[in-house]
Every structure is written in C-alpha cells, then in structure tokens.
Length: 119
Image (tube, rainbow, N blue to C red; front, side, top):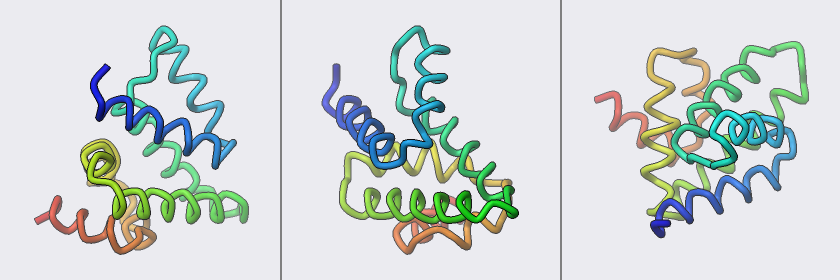
C-alpha cells in the first residue's frame, strides 16, 4: 500500500473515532467495497453526508456535528500536505454546484482552497 493512501486511511479511521456518527457511513462504504476502504470514494460519501446535515435545519445536533466535522477537516487541511489532495479533490470539488451555504461554513484553510478551485 502506498504511503499517502495509508495516511488517508489512518485519517479516516481517526475521524470516525472522533465522530462516531460516521461509523455507519464507513461500515456501508466497506460493505459496498468488499471490505476495502477507498479514501476518495469514502470522501464522496462523506460530502453527501455533510450536505445532509446541512439540510437538517431542525436538528440542533446535526448543525453542531457539521460545524465540528468541518473544523476538523479545516485543521487537517492546514496541518497535513498529504491530506490536502484528498480533502481538495474528494470533498471541496464535490461541493461545487451544491448548497452555497456550505461554503460559508468552511474554515479559513478550506475557504482559500475553494476559491482556488472555483477560479
């Protein structure tokens, strides 16, 4: 296994440990991928999940979880060059054409990269 992929997988496992609400998403992903964790595909699933939290306006916990996960991704993007490709390509690029409200919630590192992607 290549080092960046292992790093991405370790990051996903750490994120799921930090946010237990992601465990069903990871379990479904592994089931769909014959037990394998494919980071870029998982991040597409994660993007859809985060967008669903955004649309669940009546659920205060969903809004808090969304904010905490976006902050976690923003910190990871700012602190790890190995994670920047995964987060940029498989999260931020998937936000193009989606609810613009999500862009307003992004932290400073992700906002800067989103501006690069959209320019």
